[in-house]
Amino acid sequence: MRLTFLGCGDAFGSGGRFNTCFHLERAAGGNVLIDCGASSMVAIRKAGVDPNGIAAILVTHLHGDHFGGLPFFILDAQLVSRRTAPLVIAGPPGLGERLTALMEAMFAGSSKVERRFAVEIRELALHERAAVAGLHVTPYGMKHPSGAPSYALRVEAEGKVVTYTGDTEWTPELEPAGRDADLFICEAYFHDRATRFHLDYATVTKHLPAIAPKRTILTHMSPEMLARAPTLPVEAAHDGLTVEF
Image (cartoon, one colour):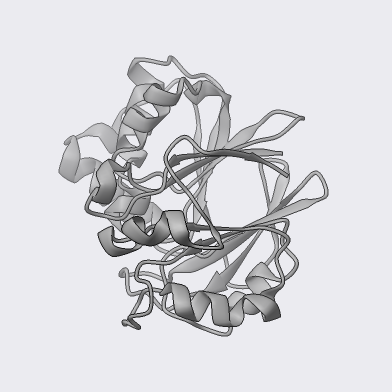
């Protein structure tokens, strides 16, 4: 599989980076996005990704820098890309209601317009391994208030596993979520300053031996972490980075 970091920034565009949006490509087709932050359609266009090749969008939590791009994606599919294939959007409980409210707040009436394609909202249950668009997704509970449950997502396809922590402070749930993953994408907002609701690099590295992923890439970094990234022994993401695993 191939994963491209279309956006790996925080909520504030630190370092000129796009909001979180990862593009996961599979040999069998039916590609997926993991998160779709507010700037994601710009990142998709810049990278030359075909939106109609995306079968599903997986959402970790309901903050704008992680799901705020969904109205733009849906409207682009309707008005620009002329999508006809169904689209699955899967995430935590409350996703459907919040997405409708967001679409109405941004583009009044847009949630009620008849479309050429079906949008299926899947609200994923904690720890339940669910089949979504030809892959399997297991959510784990994170510590990050977003008005709904916040998840880390363990995604399995083609014999490989990619786990994304989403945003969270340390929780033991991260160990089973990421254990032995082929690719572990982990938030590291600060270097060694512990804070509520976000991970720091020192905490991440302390727990990595227990998680034992095959490859770790840091994301969602503050300006402080971006300045340190070139000297760190753990890989750090940048917009446009593509990895195969």
